[in-house]
Image (cartoon, rainbow, N blue to C red):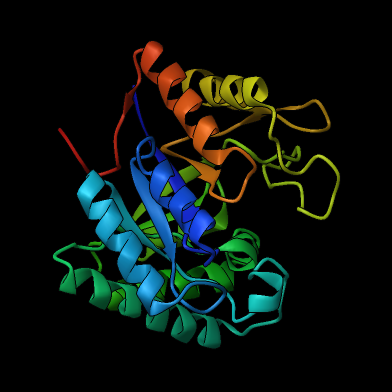
Length: 254
């Protein structure tokens, strides 16, 4: 068994928070860097690309909606055409910085509301797949496991990567509990580790309704702004490796 461990980073500019993002790279195998629209800046993007290069961590773009006040996590009405243009611009911006640093962009993972809207809306999902293909068809596209985002990527001929979430609660339909609801973010270390081990070994997660939700976890996300994210990532990686799971970026290795 093998799995990728990814983290969303570059969404906070304070020195302590940037150091947190850099520190978590010791334990994850892929990072998704905010591209300056919902959060981030060119300087921060460059700093994190350099840190990822030094750690041998795969670099991905994390494009979001133009809603910095809501950190890109609030649902917004957007046409597929506008979403496509927004994603193309953000991915190209990070790809250019990465190329200047000698790093090839590996993947794209939409952020927040854009990610979850594409997991429900087939037209939006298709637009995001078109955007990624327009930049570089070799890019992997991360999406919610079993969702229309995965189907749209495959229909466009892209390599879709099914994602599960270590630190987020699930509903019975396989979607995530919205962040504005109690219990949406899971921070208790033992619970996070147990969930990840089950996702990888058994291909299921328990929903808040108590239902067993089947999923395929090719990559598992730990959010950089979850309290204790670095420690959680360390514990999760150690537990997976103790189970004999190879933790490696998608597309790396044999």
